[in-house]
Figure 1 (cartoon, one colour):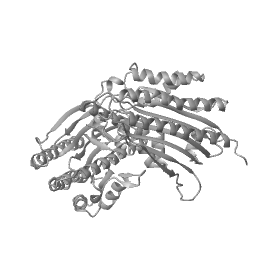
Figure 2 (spheres, chains in turn blue, brown):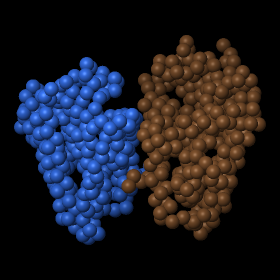
Figure 3 (cartoon, chains in turn yellow, brown):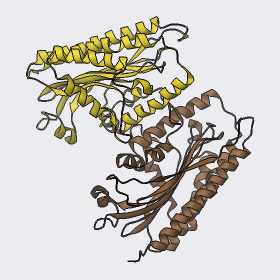
Figure 4 (cartoon, one colour):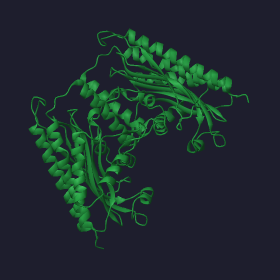
Length: 294
Length: 294
């Protein structure tokens, strides 16, 4: 039987790869353009590694895989940009929670995810992902959010926060999407309940987007991806010139602990992936390179 | 109505405080006895801080509290020794899981818990706790386990592992308790399932111990507490003379990441405490002071 989603799957996964290439090229340019006085050493480059998704029972079914890209540079202390195209069957528990999976457990999913931990404490930590999922239904999800490591920058009125939000707001509104709802979703999701603290200054987060117009939804998700390139690199390029003190660095390392707490206690992708045989190396590549709990 | 457990509660909580005092005194002695050449600066001392358990609805019921003790020293990079006596009512979810709580949600619990992260990578990280819980039933729980930070020491046949286990084995056997069962329980509990790795070289772990002879059970739990003083400080006093390299330290910081992963993904005390309004500062005092995920 012909897969009615075949063309959409190809176009979506090709796009995620294109976006990955564009982002990695821009991040490597930032590495090169950074001032040598603050960042001694050679500009870093991404190292890519393919991985195959393994089946629990060891059978040789093709379950897809992905490419993990890691930049350990002089500006990007540790940055992962990953793409994947996976398929398989949901567990009964997942079937019950995923649209269109109740009668047929098969799924297909492609996406890009990114996390950047910066050496300079004045450069915010950043996260984004977009994805396309197919069961007997299909939908897009994604978003981007910013986590300044210094308390004075974790203010919704800070210039970085204003810029970051304005770019995603424009992307949403250009497609008639509800920016305020996606902003709220982001704030609610990236919240450390045990500390009653937001993880950062937010951004947007959306899931299960299917308006019935696939071309429009795909165009929106593409623009959310492109928006990242307007949202983060300009902040990075401006902030990378700002010198920092040991106290700034200490504050950064402590704030990174909140990131770890969020990812291991609450993040659905992380906890689900780790508890169901996902690729540990890729999943935990989001962990900060150095963290302090003093 | 007279509390039939009143005397037992007093004796148990008094014991946990005595044990806390003995352990803290010995750890401070280790700080003083450490060689100045390897550990510059003044020997560290414990700083104690009382906390009160807060009720979710803000009412002023006495729900108990505890005393957190932290040693940030030259040998003990970060060590928490905490005692607490708390009471209250279990949530319906907890009621269903705790012996004797199905018809009456009230509980009382006292205990001591300890975690030590050492500066010297050749000194293993250590954890212990013992506790006494009362619902309409009562029981003891506890144990101790060792986490060497260097791969070569995470061998069940290493001298440290042999010594640590032999002390707890003696303590169990002196009271006719099943050391092998408690050792197995420890190995099963302190396991990083996502990596299929043990956290360390184990020790013992037991819960819901009520043989019907309270005096015998209390004497056993007291001896498990005393065993800690024979199990860990001799290892610390021997290992503290061993110099280390930057590579040893790097291995230690990475291994500490496994500790964080375990505590936030699996540890019942940590995840339960954080998700039910426990004392965040005390619960997360077990987090290592510096961690690396390279």
